[in-house]
Each structure stands twice: as C-alpha cells, then as structure tokens.
Length: 256
Image (cartoon, rainbow, N blue to C red; front, side):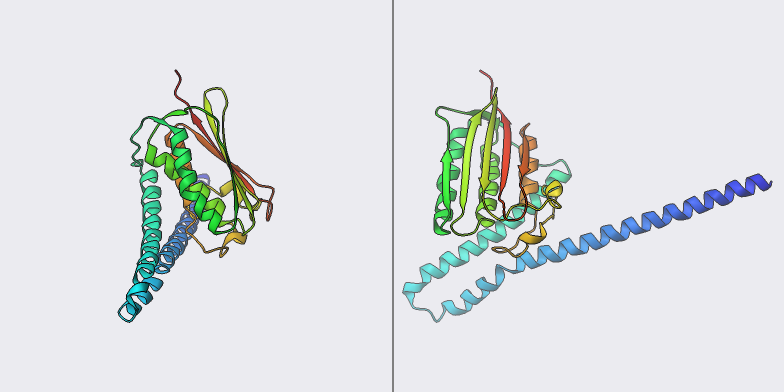
C-alpha cells in the first residue's frame, strides 16, 4: 500500500508539472498571437494615414496635382495588397493549401522581367545594381507568377536594407541541372542571432526594425515556401551587422 501511494503521488506531481508546462506554452502562444495581431494591425494602418490625408486634400487641390495624388494613393494601396497577399500565402502554406500551377517556363525571361521591374527602384534610391545572367534559356518546371514573386521579394528586400550608394548584385549560373540564383548586397546584413531563424514567420532582426520602414517579417517566409514548393532550396549567409547578405536560390532545371 505504501509503495502504491508513493507511485500515485509521483504521478500526481508529474501531472501537475506537465499541466504547468502546458499552461506556460499556451500563455507564450497567446502572447505571441497578440503581438503578431498588433503588428499586423499597425502595418495595415500605416498606409491608410496618407490615403486619408490625400483624400481630404484632393477636393482643394488644383487639377494639375491630381495625377500625382492618384499615384500616391495607388502606391499605398499596392503596399496594403502586398501585405495581405503575404499573410494569405503564409496561412495557405501552414495549412498545405499554397497553390502552384506548374508548367515548363523559361526562367531567363522571368529574371529579365524582374530586373526591369526592380531596377528603377534601386536607381531612384541611388543604389548600384549589377546583373550577371548566362546566355540561352533556363527551363524550369514551375509557376511563372510565383517564381517572379520569389525574385521580387528578394530584390525588394535587398533594396530595402541597403543604404543609398550601396551595391546589389543579381547573378545566375547553372550547376549540373540546377539553376543557382544569387542576390547579394552590402547593406545592413543579418546578425548571428537572427540568421538561423530569418525564414521563420514574423521574425525580424533587431537592428533592421525601423530601417527604411518596417514590415511583418513574412516576406522571406513566403520565399522559402515558394522555393520549396518548386523542389528547390533557399539559403542565406551574412557576416553580421553592416556586412551585407547573400540569398541563394537553387531550382532544378528541366532535363532535356
């Protein structure tokens, strides 16, 4: 009887400790959820302020200034749309519902279009943009829109975290039926503390918060999910704060 009481008491202690662990885990998850929701609300509210201000001023503005105001509104609406799209993609990925419509596409054309789209932004920010692409076609079995999204996210990230006068480089090479795309910069870099978690959702490097605007910390999560959905892999290297970073995307080429 004494032995049975000891065993029962031990089980009660273990159950109590387990319950405490579960409660602590639940509280951490709830706090994280509250933090994420607050951050999402903040990021979605930011673009609404200039839209509201412009809308109030438009009734008093001369007609020649209206096209410029329209451009500003469209820019903020596009920012909101991108945030919502990224949130939806992260949610779909976590539930296995991320849709990829794959077919054989020429990655070279997608690369060129990404350069044409992102180049002017870097020029406007006084950044040097170097591009090195091979000759010929680069056939990949994938979703052209999603592949373009990968490039746009990484190039926009490089432009965002590289100061004026900085340098961004895009290069593509072929290594044994694998396409290697490298996007590097000499911007603010990634700290050693954040580097292992940089592709996790809602992770932001401390020294990057507030630099050239803020974000939700989900753009790189979307990149990872899209690259892996295409059978590829994405990695990042950085020597630390102020020493730039390099993102490398590996995608399987279509064998002939």
